[in-house]
Length: 424
Image (cartoon, rainbow, N blue to C red; front, side):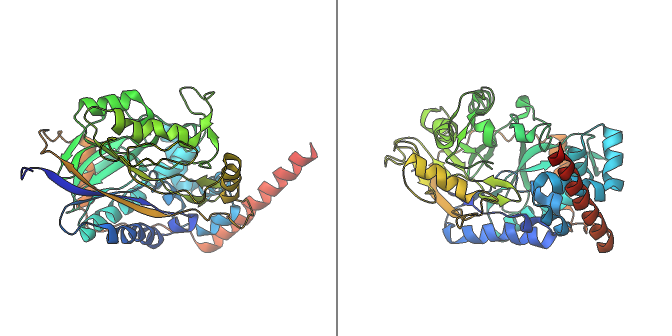
């Protein structure tokens, strides 16, 4: 092998999250550090390590400072309660930038939460000495004005940040294709622009990011292939029972088992693609209030790279899986669907929230890159400025007596409305 061959290890972390992991800055740092601690035994001592984390691992930071609200049980109720308690911060954003209440709530907290997220990931990349795909998080777009990052009004995209072992920024990618839960009826994110997707040459591959649904879409994979992507990163948060059926745009009537559908993302990209040789697809699991997330993380390659036949549950074995997390159990389709329902939030079953966590790794090789690094965007220059700042700002706290009063009032209002609805 020539000395210019890139040899590296890819590591995918499948963590279990809960709302309690996001109620304070310390809790979030501990949760993120726990994932790197899980990964550490799998690091290579003699080659660079690429660690890939999961989609939307910064979304629940909207709960930061609001542990009191978790008793409201559902994400929708908690979001409404937070909007009411943070009205002085959120209302001006809503009115000035003409956005929805849920987007205004996220944008109003972004100054603190973006820095918490980026600084936490920066510190972990440095401490563990790894190339880090931070996962993804809802984040505004920024640009520098007089040397300071300034937020673009109204915009909130699902973004993946890539960091080098020194904590420096490699690049940023926005999610282009949003699921219904990410659109106006859900957390209300802004879709990214396909024309802005780029490939980042590094010692751990020519990295292209396709966040979750993007990895299923030919326009995204085609653009990354055209850019020379050799390692596809697919951070994922599948908000459904893994053994249930799904139907997503562009054809929501095309109902298939979730694992069958997932074969059309990373596995297809690596087994049938041109430049894409490997893909890393970590999936978060766990119940977040009333929301349930599940899946099987995987690292895939060409059929000749992984001739052993295996696959997701509910699918036939096949080559192409370099590493794959087993699901929580085996059984018939009916048995697997029943277990998926038992794991889900508020099932009251002994299996509730007993998802499988895991860490996968694979040693990968690629020839030396011939790609030039893409020029930084204004947004990336601004994020690097944020990364260069030394400390995370403290979280503004509302007095506990006010939070309690508002929470009691909200719960009482919800009970009153529910009672009226029952009477109709």
